[in-house]
Length: 177
Ligand code: ZN
Image (cartoon, rainbow, N blue to C red; front, side, top):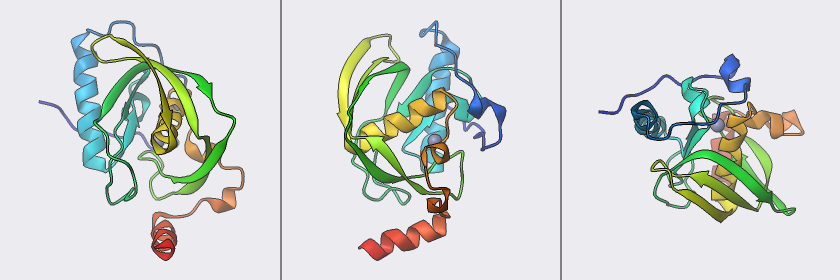
């Protein structure tokens, strides 16, 4: 049975630290952690989560884009757990898109991110994968990998006046439709 884990909120020191490499992928506690992260992310309406967000300093992220009330336009994918992810290449071309974060509740901001990236990671079964991602999924990966290096998305926003509340964001996104 997977468990709901507490989510670290901005101000917790673990969110500002570099997380440790996973050394033993087959450790049952690592496998249970991945299941618990997935359950916690789904319950909170997230589309990605990183282990430091549940108070575990390990280099594990889950990327799970899907349309939901917080991200109505997100593409649908099967959730993928990525261990020790390494961004090998970021495209020079960037785009700006709205982000939020389970650890920064009630804040949204437009964040510039590379359009494309090349990533190497280990699957939860220990298989090494190297692949390219684009668009919104590349954005989630950059956001989650930032968590592993102690960076929260507001730090990526040059003009802090652009950070808005969830309610303001909902108004902006409705106005676009
Ligand atoms: Zn986040």
